[in-house]
Image 1 (cartoon, helix red, strand yellow):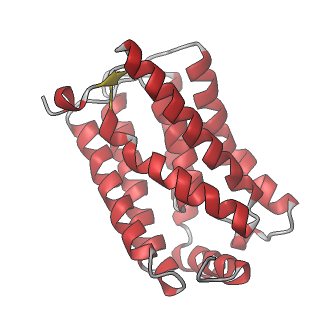
Image 2 (image 1 turned 90 degrees about the vertical axis):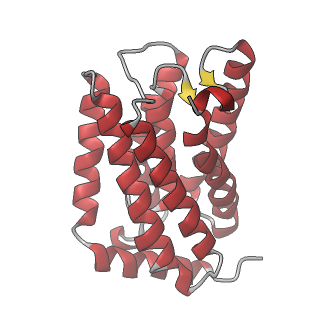
Length: 221
């Protein structure tokens, strides 16, 4: 049982979207810039993508969870802390040169691009199709679920080894947000749960092969 109703949940989004405008535009500009860096990767792409994603996670943790969602859910303060930790982890991964990108093919790349396009374009269209107005929708890049889906997409396009600690919080949130989506009847978020499970399966297989994920000891070097 959730401590708030579906109506209260979407009312928070409406209040938040109105309060932070035009942050939504900035988030989409960052998303487009990320896509350009993924299509035409440079030596500094990993640092730039780590910083860009880190800023979005920090913003979402403080502005959405801490200042708005906490009004109807006390657990949002813990969620805010998780998102801040993830933002700092991504900033650190970028600054330390732990994220690398090149023009990759294969299933991981296709899934990664699908998640990126879904988070930026398909996600809001599903919300509108199910009767929600634009101001009620979780906005790309500055609300938890579309940001997590987008992050999964970007990280699936990273070249190995990928630090385990940049995926810990997104995997946790995929379970929290994805399961809540079924209770709140938010169909565009259902993919969050499945994407988290899919990424976890990929990571398990990749780690067992010793090719796509750095071990915790190596991550500290």
